[in-house]
Length: 278
Image 1: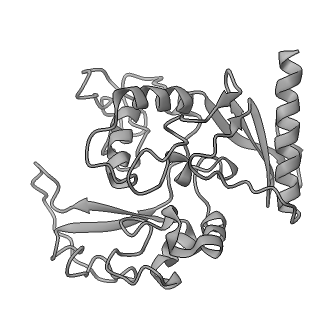
Image 2: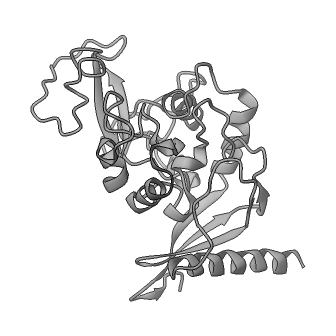
Image 3: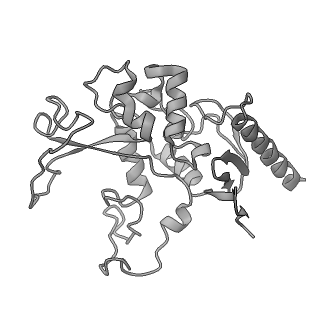
């Protein structure tokens, strides 16, 4: 009976996604505080076929869940930038659709990181072009980094975002470097956190160590290696992207961790090759 209910929920989710892709009413975008039920299986049609998400031990209520609730002051939730229909990341198409609907008032386009630079006129589409056209969020990092003496310097050669030369937010004005990237997919962490070797097989160096626990970690979480664990990444994201001025609550961290370590995403069906699990 339970299995039948789960499959039924997945069928409904798949039908809704197909309906939207064909111009129907259902919207795959998850707004904060919606309180939907996240099913054990969730399918979305995309240009390449069908994306499938699996939630281990699902379904799960999202009402009041900190991943799906706007717990920060800027109106965003984690799900704002980690959309199920975008494999728990964010696509340029989704960002463009939100701009068409809500413009700059949508929390996605917060001036701090949802625009090319906070100094630009926030009501104009051009000020958010990197997010709308490319799905990129602004990441501002201090230069030089705290407690680090770099052996090189940074000079701005080209600055299409205008932020690295900005008098208030740029390299010389604020000592900040702005880079732009897509939000990291929040899925498949069972494999990302796994450690098959006592050393980094790519570099041949010892694995990095979590400064809080003293235990080795995979080092696969962030491309720049600035945070070693999901817990540290959450605290970093809470300040940078949710607008927190204090540390994220430990209970919220535990709840988000539980969800993130149970969600999996992969392309299930290819438009040319058919099912990919055969």
